[in-house]
Length: 245
Length: 295
Image (cartoon, rainbow over all chains, first blue to last red; front, side, top):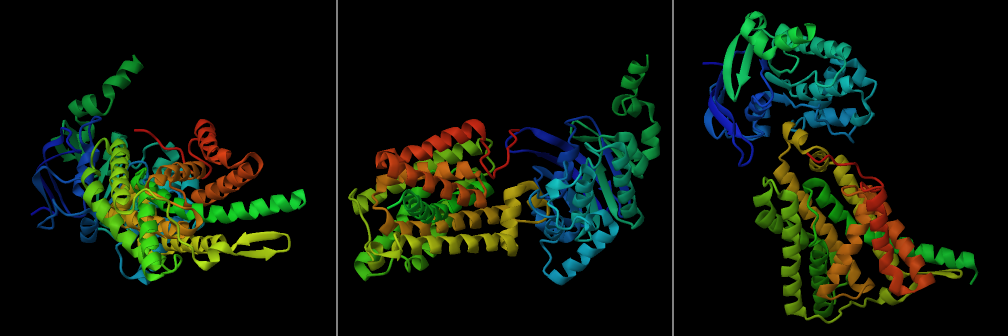
């Protein structure tokens, strides 16, 4: 039994077409995964389905043996799966501390929540200096740290990150990946969707290539990174060579 | 009376009137902020509370101010029922924005017709003792009824603000207003937050409806005039902003009082629509609002 099991899932938005078209993926505990693929492949949709923002039309998602396909996001959070959406998804008019408090919204013990917020501040000291600042006043990198920090308040078993490097300067991207690396060292299961496929695959242990809503190819990140077909199709080698010529 | 005294007098009347307008607008702006519903039915639902107050005053002698203890819970429940009946079903529709306008327009017509049938289109008003007396400050006066209504409005708005700022549920509503996806991601049941916010918005309108019974004579069709005024003030303040609704209400109430004094009451309504026109042309997000992205 896999830690997180996605079985032949189809899903889409509203009355629109299926974005995921029978996708299957097994996630093992403590491993890190990078999901790559072209635009519209269903990468973000997959993360949204796992965290309950949209429900599968067919197929099932099981976490630690329990079917979570029809659960609400808060119920899935309770079971230990956190999600950091694209573009940080913060509460712009709330302060840094209020955003972190919202990360523990489903916690009953408020004093425990305050203690966990202090732990997040230890992990991201820059946020502690900005406790009372509104989230919208932070830089892009700080906002991403806050988004990741907010998702860690519940001490999740699985953290899913949608494009954590999107729109950030290279030096900031490195800082963000260093933070995510800390989570990896702590043994957390990480599922990441990353447009910067090379960076994402270098970080993760396992890579999945999605195309047209199915798991087109998966394997060790190293293997994917050096597979000439994948390089041509998804890692931009053709374009780079074209430019180089 | 010197010019300064006249200006001070007008400011006093305008500001106190603005407090009541702010109470009326606060519910409308919360509903828009959380659910993106431009609630065209807000003023007629306010009038439902006015008629309950009127009925209780005429039949049981219940004071209009005290009647908010009846109208607010009743209007909260009515808001929850209206939301569950109509809005829950369309919340995932791709044309949600357009549908809410049409839907609230229809709701307004249904309630207008029902109130017209039950109470006829005769002007109604309540007349508690304080409605006809004033506080005197030298040459200045402040109608007691208006003062009480303003004070109560301020208290209710402050309570609403404190609820949104400091309670767990209030934070969930605020989070839903600022970023519904992020709110869901942290475990807020945004559907529940929306139902409660809609109920609270209508309850605030209910309180305003009770207070307006002795301030402004009313009949069912009057709600079209009111909704136009309320939309003007929340657009001026910035739709979805509680502080904006408050500032917009004070600014417009003072302006309309000045216009009424210097140009006559006929010109008073134009203050609101002129402000709406200007703000939409030059700062469509309003004074405190944020620009919205169209995706």
